[in-house]
Length: 267
Image 1 (cartoon, rainbow, N blue to C red):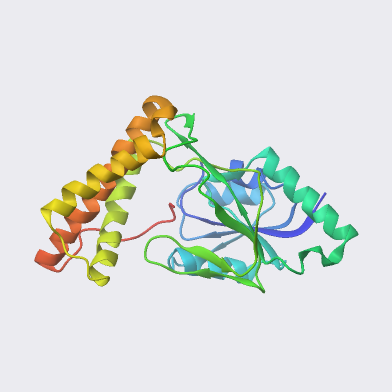
Image 2: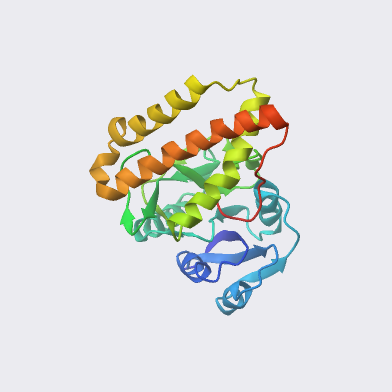
């Protein structure tokens, strides 16, 4: 059953992920892959699966998704990152939702977008604690009544009336720990810049306190310990990300330059 939904995905060298992503939304009557210069088989795979594909220069996360939304053929848009996929429960929920719309066309008059819990696969384990779940993401939206909002780190959809759904978006954020560390290095400079703009000042006390508090929050308060050794590793890496952010604020205030810059399509 095809629905009046456009699936949009922005990509850069995602041949390992794109098929899983696109196959997870078989109900989409329109699929658009907006690529920013892949050198692998991303576009070949997407075309084989029936997607429209375009290559355009990288604009940044929000602007790339704004562009993809504008190119969609339906007003209802489902935005997934290439390393995400809908769970069976989420697919069933969307199908049921739009089946009800056919019977009652006015049902969506008071809703602009839908959010989903997002579950991450971390080192082979589906994480349920430590602040990693439910990690709600607004991803199905009416483009006439919702819009992407840009920030230096994470883009998001802004909509007035958002309804929470229950089926998960599944997420494979990092292929390896090295991949995660590279991402932390990239984003920590951006977050340090945000701290500087907000007027935050570095101090060694803040560096130590915030790093320790972040670990305690993730591992104890948010029960990361219940996710076994993966929960411990995730909490330690999260604390390291906080440490690096404040260390880079110190670097920024001394040199006036951040050592990181944003690029790519990894979220």
